[in-house]
Length: 385
Ligand SMILES: [Ca+2]
Image 1 (cartoon, helix red, strand yellow):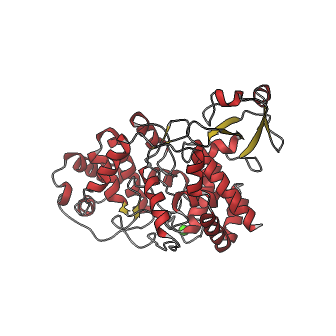
Image 2 (cartoon, helix red, strand yellow):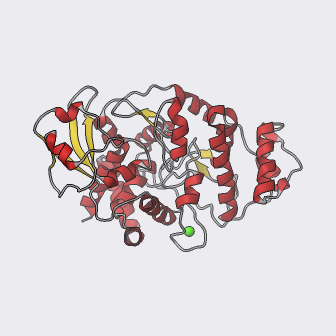
Image 3 (cartoon, protein in one colour):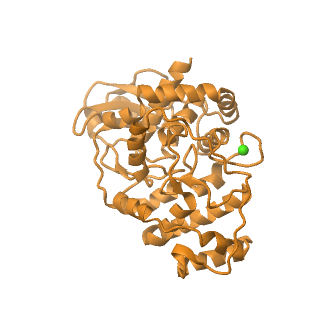
């Protein structure tokens, strides 16, 4: 996930929409011409990186349980020396959360003001998006190389994926699909120190300052509880972390210790598997439920009515529009009509999306995103049967 909902909500006014649990992606226009939320500049980074990284192997990093580091200073020095906002944040953290004040000053005296992070946000905010249509988006994620990598990940972590599926009711392929779209299964975990990204965002981006200071507080709480050196972890420019790109607030809401070593480490693939499953479960995943099914249409009405995860119809509504799922039993509840523009202004691919499709959009509020996760999950699953 990516930025969490709240992040996305902050972004909305900016450019648009989405939010996530983890916000790994940069603002980008989605099919409807609506910008996909989350801090999504990273998406573009990921896409360009993915094509250039070839068969780069997943990163193996571990931050949890290593100790919080020996830092101490009497006051704030470094890039943010004298910054009243940061000093106020530190004093508040010491007063309300029981941190040692000198430890915090020691840590934050080494935090860097990252021009590149500020620049990425600036670009993300001003980029109107360059929607190329659903097929172009889909093909960046759902392709032979990614299916192969997804199968490798599945085979390597099969027992853990099966355990997560049993415990949370979320099919293994969707856990695999999320991690593929987010980080190519650990190949693209982000190059920014998380604390630098969050502090720079909080201090230099006044519109989202409160959000990022809250994330920074959540991050410090995470490093303390999981015994991590706060200056060590790396993530996206938005501060999204690990295989599933959780923001710190999502860590607190959804992360689990799934390998039983006593710490919740989002960079550990097994902990991340359990945490992504828990995220879906807590957001209402329906065990055994469909995600999305291609639709048979008898007229073009579907292409001219509101669609997407924000709009709900009954199956009867869809029938009246000449839209019928090609397989499956449909749903007694409300569903989503998806009309994905294959190319800008071109044919719209009709789908029926169910409750679980909507659950995937809780991770990243984008129809394209959720459908890419669904198709990548399905493609990997078909190769592991
Ligand atoms: Ca663990």
